[in-house]
Image (tube, rainbow, N blue to C red; front, top):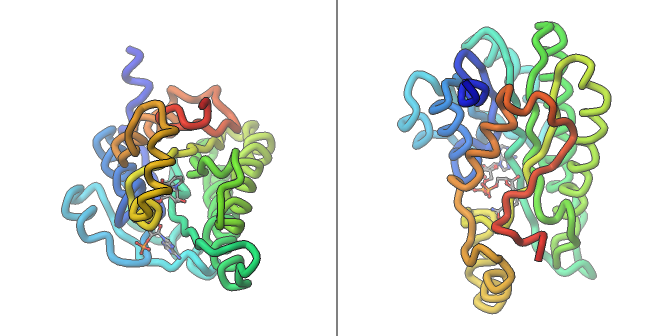
Length: 250
Ligand code: NAP
């Protein structure tokens, strides 16, 4: 049955940024599809845990440092015994004119959105290889993996790089049965875009360009996430899929 290929029954996933927004939606969808999920968050994922019960385990970790990576892997193996899926969703954005853009706004974004993503992915892929199981890695990219954006140079650098690194890792790891892909969300109504949505002019400009005529929601991303986490996508390697209401095609 074709729908069986989308099932995540018996799978164990790590999802970063599980307390809110897109990450919370992905955790919910994965559990609904049959997986057990370890959600990594800086603040407790209380709401997500209440929603998902025993199929969800929260690991508190600040992903601005690499020091937390061994603990995330160990906690996941301790709780659920294996790892099959990693979603690198946690991310930050800093808005400032490029003429004044600070080193701190550069380094903080590159650390969370790119450096930690690479080394957490490496650690999870090492576990996939040790398990001889293959696995699925999904990097949450952005429209700014394809476009320049305005006043967000470090975010654009990180998200453009993530799209490239997704292809590098797909090339190296396909032979281990590891699929590395990305999802590029369009303009979604979450904390990440709150400042933008409060700016009436920018918000109106953005809405006018979205063919679907509305901001996206966490629920809009769930189908793509389950697809790329499941065996339905076994022959999809190194691609970053836009879920954007048509923004990029405009
Ligand atoms: P969000 O609600 O702000 O969620 C971001 C998540 O990342 C939160 O759970 C946040 O935790 C976590 N996070 C940030 N820094 C962290 C750190 N140092 N350690 C651990 N967790 C950390 O925004 P979102 O829209 O759901 O964003 C999710 C992903 O989608 C991000 O990678 C973002 O760049 C990407 N994205 C979003 C949009 C959009 O329109 N919303 C578009 C394209 C791409 P805290 O709550 O504790 O800060």
